[in-house]
Length: 367
Image 1 (spheres, rainbow, N blue to C red):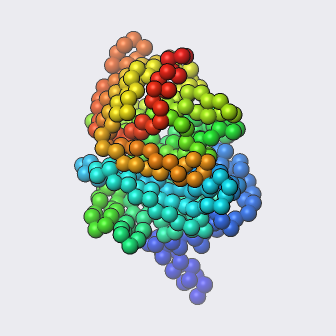
Image 2: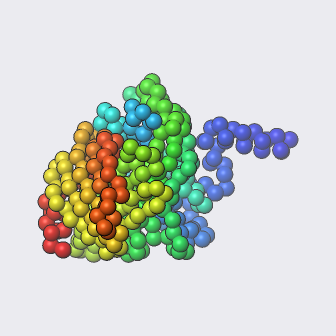
Image 3: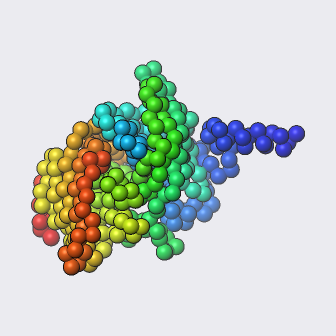
């Protein structure tokens, strides 16, 4: 009899992810206490939930970008939590931006409905589930409904050869008192599955996806972020983030990014001693050149339709920022001898130009 019950639970979980709450490794955020060994675990794995000890002035969110094979469905889904500065306002959320229409939606959930795995990247918000392997949505309100499942396969992850994984931030990840930390979960992966949004079917079979995350207390005052893995040939991916970073009462302008090409990952950042020139920065367009020991990157990014997303200020989602996920990026990469390694453009790209762009421009000119 006992084995029959266990078999029923297993089969139910495989069809309906809600039953994952019975798994031993899942932890409810609002009710949990000390988790033995978790501090070291999350230092090794920046992709997993970092805020297990937080009670206030904190946010954490994962950014899932999903694009269908023909580009007719472009969607970014952002699950996360928000804990206000005094801790009195706490909630989990799921934020969605449609890259075709630029329409955005924000769904709030009681913090008691947020759970995380203590062993791997997997979080649950109500009846919605997010991990490196799949996204499951089941949202119903008076005005909208979203349901379905998308599988994530053949992830390209950022490798780490050290016991403590610094991730895309390098040693900056371990600096205390920073307001925002950044991580990349998957540089590129394949999709399969369908999401039905207000009766419209969005099929992601043979599509491509990307995952990154942010955590801390507030986003920077100004930044440029761009990303795409939808160039002419599959398995190419690019991301760049430039930000005015607050740090202990002051600020500095830093950048980080990567270029995935022919299965090789090139990383460039302030900490790798790469040199970045922000040649132009306006509300809708930016031109950038990056040089390091291996390559020169010439980038032109142009914003298209814009949706307004909520962003954190001292943990509370009180800021509105514009994002385009149908922007255009033109990227040329040359080696040290000036030979063109890569030259392509895409009109399926994420782009955020937030805050005082002139301040970023002037700050970089001083270097």
